[in-house]
Length: 168
Image 1 (cartoon, rainbow, N blue to C red):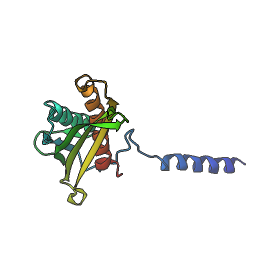
Image 2 (cartoon, one colour):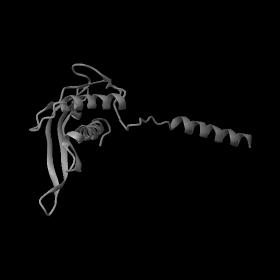
Image 3 (cartoon, rainbow, N blue to C red):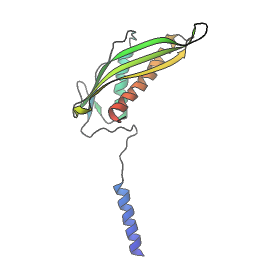
Image 4 (tube, rainbow, N blue to C red):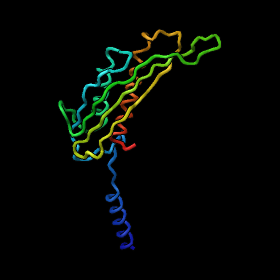
């Protein structure tokens, strides 16, 4: 009987030690040979210019990658590099009512991103990411723009991070 308990204990110990899984909270799967990242300045080339959007977006992408990965930010070019431009930023009426008055207004943003992986160039990609937020038309855009752009930057940077590191 003592032998049976010893065998069961040995199997249990082997099972526990053999089945360890390494996970990150963000779901990122970053190869071990990637240690540094860089983010180039994202120029605003949209027809409508928000003077702080380029800076806020660039810093938002840096923060997202720094906070959700083990990668170190470097000036110049890292093992992986993000570059691109803001290609769309617009405000337009939505939900037109019978009296031709808009009930809602939509603020939207589109960013074109180039991802270069210098350790594995076959993983390079170029893609556009968009987000929008609707707000009541009786609100002034100046009153809500900062909060809405912050939300859109968070959404877009999360999508960029996921495409680059979470294989979605």
